[in-house]
Image (cartoon, rainbow, N blue to C red; front, top):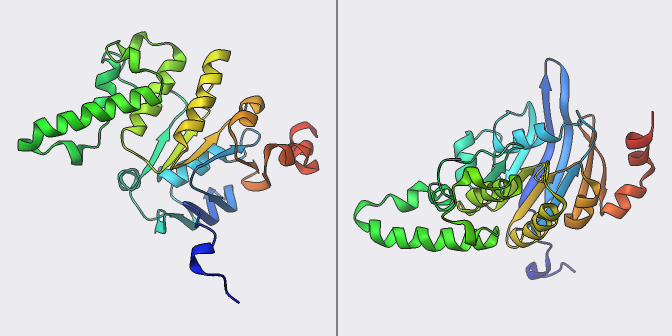
Amino acid sequence: MNSPAGFQAAKPVLAIEGLTVSFDGFKAVNDLNLYVDRNEVHVVIGPNGAGKTTLLDLICGKTKASHGSIKFKDTELTKMAEHKIVRSGVGRKFQTPSIYENLSVFQNLEVSFPEGRSVLGALGFKCTNEVKARVQAVAEEIGLAEKLDSEAGLLSHGQKQWLEIGMLLMQEPELLMLDEPIAGMSARERELTAELLKRICKGRSVIVIEHDMEFVKQIAHKVTVMHQGKILAEGSMEAVQADPKVIDVYLGH
């Protein structure tokens, strides 16, 4: 007997199937399948050159796939322009923070509010209140509510990273991609970032590329190990760490 529709497993927010990209014959990503669920922090690890950053480039449209499919909430992304992928609800943070150093924290968040909603001329006042409320909510979420009037350039390295995550959150993405978010952070900032990621994955999906295994243990619901453009292993951090194939790649010859 078929199970009732209500009991079917929820569809993944992101479904990648058969994804391949070749650069002059070299397959940087090779026939890759990956599924990311809602409310999930999905961490992608692997040695340098495994294809991790290329994978994010493919999802956000910066690099075009040679073959395969990337479906985000049933919409095929491989043929879409980069800005349209952003509008559809995909946000990406690169390794170096790109914030407006000479603007305040408030202004950085304000300018990140999606234009389509705020530039409505006569409705300006109403929208300004909407923008202010959103800025306040995001500032609280990223732990910078006390710093709204501070110049962004004066923030610590970790705070700048959080601000950039906040700038993405202003656009209310359903899929957030972060490339090595804790690089260069202090121990305390790493702890706070782990807490932040646990908060912001509620209601959305988060993909993180990370090298720091202790941090991965703190945040990951699921870990995918990439090696030479393919998936080597996938599962919980404990399962992946115990996998002989993974041990061989990290510690082998």
